[in-house]
Length: 247
Image 1 (cartoon, one colour):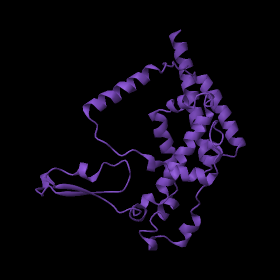
Image 2 (image 1 turned 60 degrees about the vertical axis):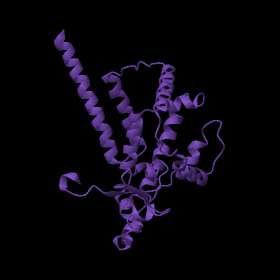
Image 3 (image 1 turned 180 degrees about the vertical axis):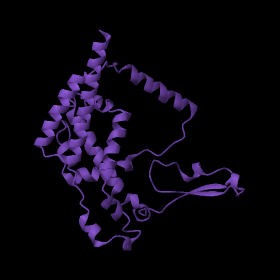
Image 4 (image 1 turned 90 degrees about the horizontal axis):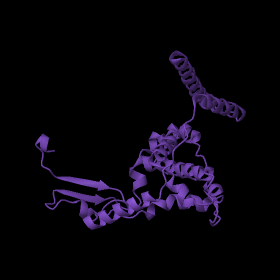
């Protein structure tokens, strides 16, 4: 605004996510910048992405998280340790996969409440929302109370309500938080991953291809596995040629 010679006054409009700071914290002392929260239960009406799109991504992410937990051989012995093994890279790739699975039909339908004339009957008929069976995954975890799928979906939908409101920490609180995190890091033993050879990668991908064919995977999924297998084979050949050259 300053670069355009405009008065530096602005209103920040926010939804009611519990993670936001209060309106008072977001306002400037001179009152030129102020904040206002939208009324309750209006987000879904005025923000198209909130019409099932975000919810589907959240449910898909929780499904992937539970699946990865169950695939960890030690999850029944130490669930907390298994969760700590989930790193930021895992989270980013899981969210990317969930976003990739969102159909264009679902995105089109998300505009229904805001622009009802924008959606035709053909789009409505083609939208198929996959029912994500979270309960069947949750109930495989030990020491958990059995849940129905309705209860699991309700838990997933309301999980964000338990988020702590954003707070401004004092210097002492920041120091205590960082110190506590450093203590937790000391308890984690560094793991030296075993490097997988190109030959092992080719063999594993050939097995994956055979399995995918038996499960009638779609053509584009098979092509991705074939590209990975071919790339691993190229690296294997290149490594062999380099060894011969060195000798």
